[in-house]
Length: 466
View 1 (tube, rainbow, N blue to C red):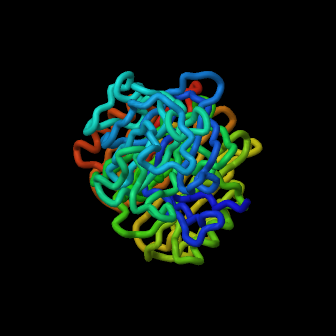
View 2: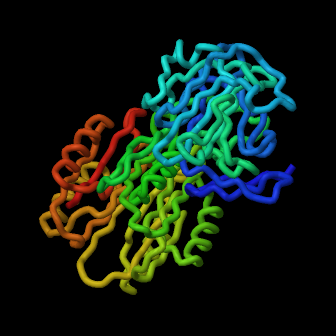
């Protein structure tokens, strides 16, 4: 059976229903697995295999009872849980298909439905009431086999009702839904490919939730790699685009620091976890389509070098780039290109085979002295910060990396842009959060944040500028 492609970069391709003439649309929202954290969940029927299509059947495995939870923040619109029998509904009218179900309305205009739960578990054990606001992960009831069920499982679907009363009282079926036109393919955080596939097994867990729109800045630090794409998707839904990203290893895994700003209608692409060849392929494809690179990052993941980047479809000066070069190759290119009027925009360094490897973006720019140095110890960085500050230059880029068991900084200083700054380094996560709040409350924006491990624990350095 053919299957539709998974989504990347916050976009899910339309997927034709197997054997059907139309396509199901992807959900606007991004949802978590609707079982309690830690539950092993098997997908019985995905949106293609389910009959009718556009819905999902899944069940907990390994011993119950299995607790069903809200897939996203929303308002409970309907709770029916007074039935206690499994039914053979084949050929029966909707008026006799007496399922227990819960409908939740979400701020994005989509609704989610949870069906077949045990009698009384929603209104009784979970205490659900219509009109109640629930957060993602809120307990909704227990998995069951009440109503038109082929065995114990959860029937889950994302839909867009015709109106507030766009479903039947009995069974909670969407009306005006010929061809499943009111159903959407769920986009799911925390699973490979971002969608349910028949036969796959996943572990339910908390994931980044909806992001509130309208802020000057939305920033997160120390985000585990498994949650990074979900965070980007949620921020994109809220109208933000990534402005800065940084990846580092700590606590036994890769973590991301990311800063978002309102997208302002400018198209963008963000990639991560790429090999050198994959990064080059994406770089070539995006730039050919009119995107320009605005940040490139390299980092180590399970012994291999990986790349992440941000591209934006906007005008700007000429640019050049390379990745994975040795220190001598990097210095040769920098000398050559700076003589031609290019200056480095970002300069990421990653240790590979005990040697530093450089990933650098350049832009053609005139006037104003700049200084770019790598392999700075924290003390050397502080001295350079003081010296360059006295000369009217401030840090515009900073990247921390490990080499030979020591921490180094790669830094770029420039006289432009001007404006008041705040800068800190060597911060714990809690100290960084306090510094971020103090700076942003004072009207600064986060321009740079980089992370590294000290004693196995995350540490942070950052620059804020008005």
